[in-house]
Length: 316
Image (tube, rainbow, N blue to C red):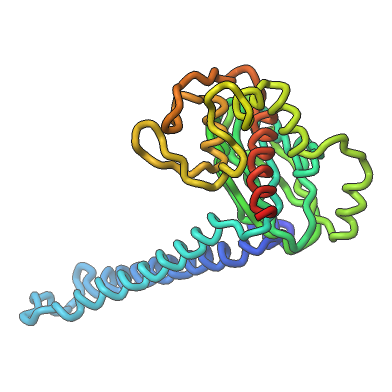
């Protein structure tokens, strides 16, 4: 019985899990009470007004306006309260805290490719320390996937051509199932893995087990130069192209008169779809790198550009 209960309701292993479970159980209890009430009333009237019973069936002369207003407004306010409660939890799940460890995830038929900030890579496994917030920056190489860890109550679509994010703070050491919960092809059921939540000291030992040649930022800098990006976007370049130092997180005026924020998605699109959003004052002459570089290379270059902004801010 205990194993069945743990299968239906996995461990609460993240900071988000208690809030999600509280909403779920509140909905179950509320809907059960309403269902039971309707059933009891219906059964009462079935028995009381059954064929042959001697009961007064004369329609009531007085109105029932107050009663009708009550049974309309009370459920309305109860469910509005549930809505705002769930909305508050949803927004909390959508806004990672500052300082969260950013880990890049790429979904591919049929595996999860994961890269840590220090450059360490994993396949269908994710090792994280307990008590520290983690933000996953995710994209897909082919079709829509879905990164789902039931014990964390964390679930997010992983979409080709864009970034989606998911965050959680693990609260309980252990090994937890990772699933793709969006049907993604023939071997969808094999796209599974494990998330290992470790004590900080144990996680530090795991990090030291295998030497990493370069960090994600260093890899991005290497690709930035090897792909020729520095030839156009350097301060002393002969080509009229936007400077990228300090651009992350800042507003960028576009040639069509609109303004966008240079977030991860904007930087990614500028690499793969350069004519989608052309910066004001510049010609659309940048070649596309779509199909020429992998998602991992794009992630590394974006991480490098974000690092340039962080370095500029730290010097100010």
